[in-house]
Length: 446
Ligand code: IFM
Image (cartoon, rainbow, N blue to C red; front, side, top):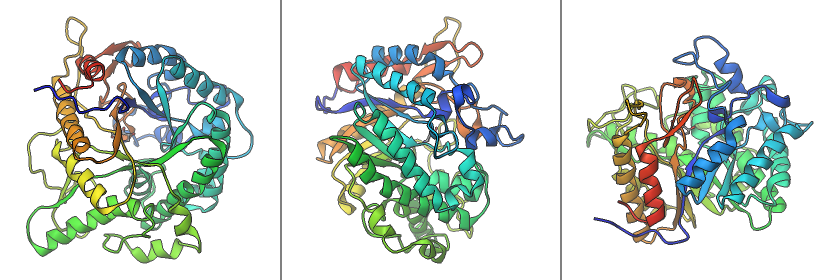
């Protein structure tokens, strides 16, 4: 059955991030980032890949914008590389870096594609890391300086701004689990990072508003419905704690409620970092909440609050993506119903949704990623339901426009609508690209 629930104003988009696609890691004055350092450290990345070249988007952006235009995108979400703009994290501006994003933004606008800029998608300048990184409160000031520079230079053309991508991942995977840069293993560091990231978000909102006329400003969180594996009190508590960790630690302070109480970490550490005025700053009014949705979490009780497909996660269904994440489309509606019921955010965008599968070119040079089409179709059905239920969801960004560097997994996980041959850099639109093009054209799910 064809459904036509998408209003003309609804934005169909695709998303990427700087370190995952750009390459040019030390090109034209760019400074080193924590991800450059992490990937250049042996043993950190599963297949020993780096983002040194990635999709070479820094040189091939025009071809990529043409592919976006052929796809019919209304909007494109990308991130700016902080060390490409401020190589030392603060101070001297790298004009060559600004010029790259100037060209990209102009190229997008020429094609009628609305740029959504994420300021921070995990590539902190290494020099700031050497001064303590996000565990140091001074990094908040550096972020505000960076937000000021970028919004002054691009704000005449870019109206849609996302301060941070998934602060949960930066804080907990980067600083407690250590699977992401900077690779720390400390609860204290994870909680300091959490608070300083949220403070950086809140403090930068008025700066963006001052610099950008008619700005629309948000933050992006990765959110999962949190279910218990059984009705036992312990499992119920584990599910509540996971909800506290992943969802509420990052939603509640933005909504002006401070940090949640039922969490699996030492809450006293987090509270001790809060200075007068911080919670008010974090709760600066925003224009939209960005939601990245991939899967749900089903918890059974255990002592250690690990966060992914570990012993605590129960897989209820067999269908999983190449990341080992359960495919659970109805969780998207469940999540938005809850957000709409429990919070007062006035507008939402799904800023990422997608799936990794082990795609290959067939003998005819095509990629028939049928599973990804099915994943997108079933999630877009939920998007339709969300809109039909009057929840103010205004856009959907597929993750990702193209195969790219998937962090600790290197180049081994493919999320793209476009297949990348990382040897030749040849781009091949997959079946899902053509399917999504038809969805966008018809503004309906087919
Ligand atoms: O590739 C990442 C992206 O950088 C942030 N959200 C999840 C994606 C898939 O893991």
